[in-house]
Amino acid sequence: MEIKSIAIYLDTENIKGMINIQDLLDDINLKVTGQNENVKTIFAFKKAVGDQSSIKRFRDQLKQLNFEIQDAPHITGKKNRADLIISLDAFEKLYIDNPKIDLFVFLTTDSDYSVIMDILRRYNKEVWLVATQEDAQKVIFTSAADNILLISDYQNVVGNPKYKPNGLVIPDIKLKGETDKRAFKAILKVFKSYTVDMPYQRGFTNNSFRLLERTLDISDTQFKNFNGLYKYLNNKKIIDISKDEKNVDIITVSNKKLINRLLELEL
Image (cartoon, rainbow, N blue to C red; front, top):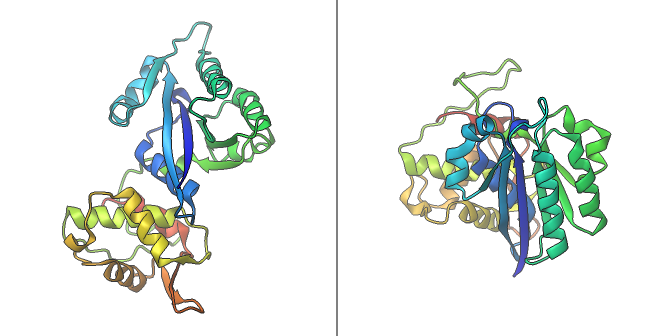
């Protein structure tokens, strides 16, 4: 079993609005493991830095997820030292290399982080960035990151409209209890990490689900088993199920906007 060790840093003043940090960690986990069943992830370091007001918005989530929290008060004008604190911490992890960190993840919109990102990559460390749509397209970030995730994918959305302005139709989802909702949300998180129209074996999808919901027994849900769950999702046109040349079940996701929207809703 290959272990991928991850360090994640949140610059809380660079997060506009609220985000679901657990969803972000789950997504990183699934994207790192990919279709390789022999890869396991460990978040070796989790740190959030910001001034008191920005930390306060996320404190409950950070405490529950065992993040190290560090206050970075403003010392000159509007600028604090979060970028310096995080950059030095990441450089220390690189220098000490015990435990070895394979992937560094930074949530920020501050271009100053591109300096430490470049240094980490120089020493063969993988670097991911979580940023806004606008910042994700800036050359200073695209040239310093191996992968860029969008903050908007993890932000809370108010309201529960049946349709979105772009005409996206939400299927009628009827879930009978909290266990069903947990199962439905977990499998959607798995599909969210999938590449559009890429085939994924059913067995890998099952394992990815178990990675997120270790204590949930699918037999306790209205779906009864994974076959029932996938049949339900296929009937709702959320996924497509087919067979490969070896008659193995293959799952593909063609509408990521629908997946993201269903995750936003309180079903």
